Image (cartoon, rainbow over all chains, first blue to last red; front, side, top):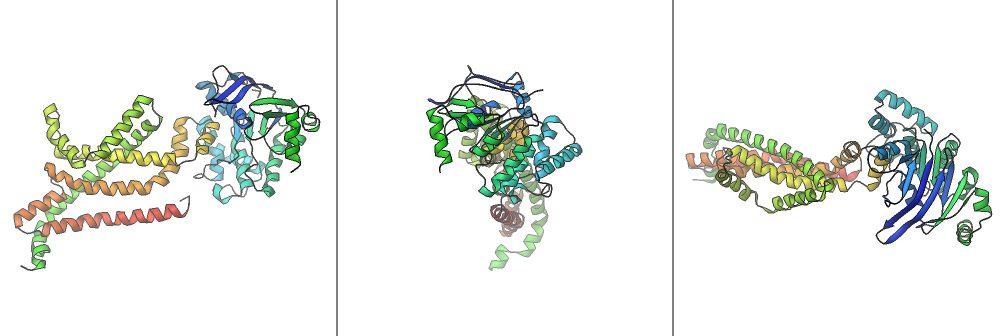
Length: 245
Length: 224
């Protein structure tokens, strides 16, 4: 059990359009990586390939803890170890908040209902949603829903957490509460890959920042390097557009 | 003869009531069996239509389209009068059950498909990302949400199935309508037909009201 990710020559086409143009990336256990870049740069597609929500070319290879991300048994193993938080939360509307968190441990791990409930309440306390456990998602604010989604991902005790623009659909006043939960997860040993437009979060929390454009990694390094002294013109243009609006 | 003697002749109605009730019982049995079988066929066909390998998907699509195009009466007569030439002789009840199930299954499959396709892609993705198998995703995440969407159209379809059971009288099944026409002949008075109409309405009107209620309720909020 570790949480390393190895990506070699990752290519992805939408018809004739090449969304990912041969990405190579090694991520260590417990590392927090923020992926930034303009929309359409392929950053969401990149992390959606890691648990194969997006198919990729046969010549490409992704391994999570050495397990290849290929359809079948090994994909099931990878998905059980890789949690994901979506831009649109994607909570299950027919289940209560607690049941949302309990579902995967019960159905995938075979945890008993009682154990899963105890675990769910512990995780909901960790993300600050103790009071709402019996409510349904539609009665929660966006920030609360996203924190439940994080608890739901944590319930599978993942080695890797993927965040796909987790704060982009939130009202501004709710961004902070979600980022705070994410900060509290950094440094706990779980590998985090965060696609985000929150440069402040990237600067404070990331071990490494990756700037992508047009399906390629343009620049990678510490937050100080990439956000402070970007070497590439495209990175500088993007950062000045994001930071001076 | 005045209107009441002709159409609502109480003496005739009273005399035919036992026969009508026997017919009603058979109609309800046929209706219930066809509805349940149609639901099972429909769910299986919908799954195959959406997720099976290409040849099976095409076959299911053809089944759905053909069975929705053929008049039920024609299908029933083919099953009852033509299949014996192939050595398959079904009773009138079995013929009617088969015809109603085949047609109801085709409509039900389309209702289920529409319900499943109404579930946002993000629900499938969230379930997959959590490691749920495709089967678990269906039973624990998608179908519970889809059922809320499909209950009003399914109830509507069920009403149609019960009404269509009257066609079984053509293949000599002693259902409600058949009993009524027989009593009409026997008494030389159409009151039994009116009695049958009243019995159909008595059973189906509440269902019609239920559909309206469900539609209002499901439209007013996403969750029950």
